[in-house]
Image 1 (cartoon, rainbow, N blue to C red):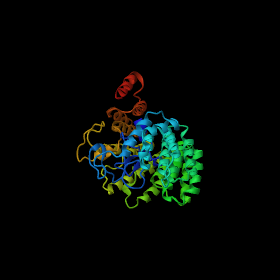
Image 2 (image 1 turned 135 degrees about the vertical axis):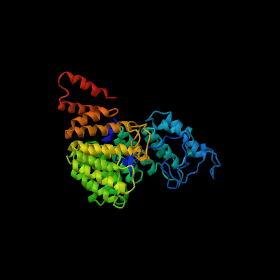
Image 3 (image 1 turned 45 degrees about the horizontal axis):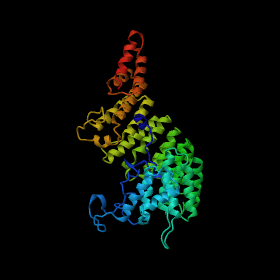
Image 4 (image 1 turned 180 degrees about the vertical axis):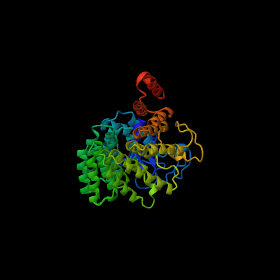
Amino acid sequence: SPVCDLRSSRSGDYSQNTGRWSCGDRMLDRRPAPPIEGATNAARGGDDGGDGSRGGGGSKGGRSGKRSSAGRGRAKPGRAAVGRVLHKLRSLPDGASSSEIGLALGAARPSQLSARDYTTVLTTLRSERKWRTALQLSEVLAAQPREEGAPALPNRLHYNALLAACADAARRRDAAAGDAALGVLRKMEERGVAPDSRSFSAAVAAAEPAGAEGLLVEFESSALASDPEGAPFVYCAAMRASLRAGEWEAALSLLDRMRARGVDPDSHCLGAALEACRAGRDGERAEAELAAARTMHADAPHRLSGVLVSTAMGACVRGGRWESALAIFDAYAADLAAGSQDAGPDPFCYAAALAACRRGGQAARAVGLLARFEEKLGGEAGGEDAQQTGGGEGGPLRATVEGGQLRATLAHLREQTVGACLAAGWLDEAVERHRGAPSPSDRSLVFALRACGQLGLLRGADASSTALQLHAAQP
C-alpha cells in the first residue's frame, strides 16, 4: 500500500541490472525498455560489442525515416532479421525445445544476425520474461557451426544477459531460476568464457542464500583480483540475498567482509547495510554507516541520497534512538539548504522524522514539521492534483512522490502528527487534527479514538455520536 511504501526501502538493487535504484536524489529505472518490433542496432552506438541497451553515437535510421550515412533510410539486413527472429520466438511457449527454436531461427535466416543482434534478442526475451526461451536459444547458438576465425557464440555479454534474466525470474519467486543461473556459470567455464563481476552479481542475485555464499567465495578466489571495481556489485547482491532471507546480521557481516578484503562499499552496499540495521533495530550501527556515506560526499554533502538518510532514521526510530533520528534529519536539511536544494528533504525523510516525534512524544516538533512540509509542497496540499502557488518550490518535492501517491503521502504524515499529539498528551489537538484532515487514514482514526477515550468522550450517551463523527471523516 502507499502507506507501507513510506516505510519501505528505496535503496537500489543494481546487482540484478533491473528494477529501480537511487542515483543521488533521483530514481533510475533499469528495466529494459519495451522492444520495438524489429529491434535494431540504431541508437546503440559505440564499438564495444553492445549490450542491447541504449548507448551513444547510434544512427537514427529505420522507422523515423531519417537517413543514416550508411543505410540512406533503408532498414539494415540485421534489423529485419532481428524482427523475424523475435516474431518466431514470440510464437513459441516459454521453454520451447532447442529443436523448435532451431527451426524458428532457420525460418528467420539467422545468418544475417551479428553478435550484437543476438544480444538484442536475448535482452528482449528477458524483458518479456521468456527466460527459458533465452536459455534454449543460447544452446542453439553454441551448437551452430562457425566459420574459421569467427568469434564463439554465446559471448560474455550474452551469458550476462541470460544470468540477469535468471535473476529477474528469481525475484519473481521462480524456484528454478537459481539452479539455471548456476548452470549458465558452469557453461561459461566449460566454454572458456571467464565470468566477470556482472556475471557473479546476477548469479548471486538468483541464488538462494546458501548458494550465494558459495558463489561469493568463488568470485573472491577467481575474479576479485582482476575486477576489483565490479566487486561492490557482487557483495551488494549477496547482502540483498541475506536480507531476503531475513538474515540481517549476515548482511552486515558481508559489509565487514568486503572492507576486510580492501573493497570500499559504494552507496548501494551502504543502502543494503542500512536496511539491515533497520531490520535489526540497530540505530547505533546505522549512524556509523550513514557517517561513512557522508564521508563519500564530503565535498558535496547535499548530494547524499535521501534514501540512505531516511533508512538510517528508520533504524534509529526502531532502535529507540528517536533523538538521533531527528538530529540526522536536521543535519541533512541543513546540507540541502547549503547546497541550494530548495525542495529540502524528501517525503520519506519527513515520514521518518514524524515517526521519531511520535516515538518521543514531540508534538510541537511534529506540528512544525508537517507545516513545513505542506508549505514547501505549495498549493492545495490535499491531493495529488493540487496546483502550485508561490515560488513553485513544491515542484521538486512533489516529483519525489511517485505514481500519484501524494494524497496517501500526506495522509501518512498527518497520521504521524496525530500520533505525536496523542503521545504528548495533546489530546484535543489530536482529535481536531484528525477531524480537520482531508481523507485521514484508518490509523489516524485509531489515534483520535484513543485521544477521545482519554478525554472521556467515549463514555455515556454521546459515545456513539462522537465515534461516528470521527469515522465520518474517513474517505
